[in-house]
Image (cartoon, rainbow, N blue to C red; front, side, top):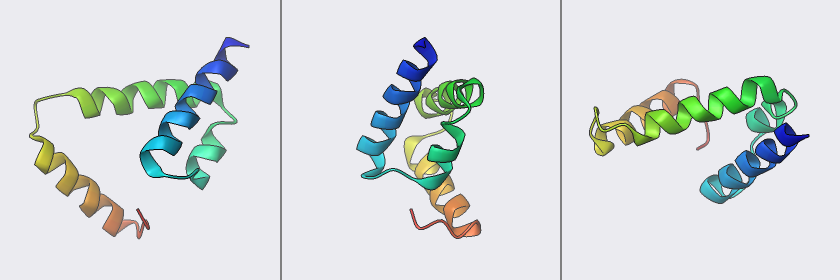
Length: 71
């Protein structure tokens, strides 16, 4: 029950950040045991200061280009 609440929060945060729901997140949301640790890992990556913010953005753009992601 509490996991559904966490999934809802993660979905709302992603929707706010991306502007809409995305298919991969909707798929993984059906498996809270995977989504919740994945979201924690992603947040930890975003919060770290080991890599400068502009390089993180550049890496995200490059990765998106490699997999032909529209974001």
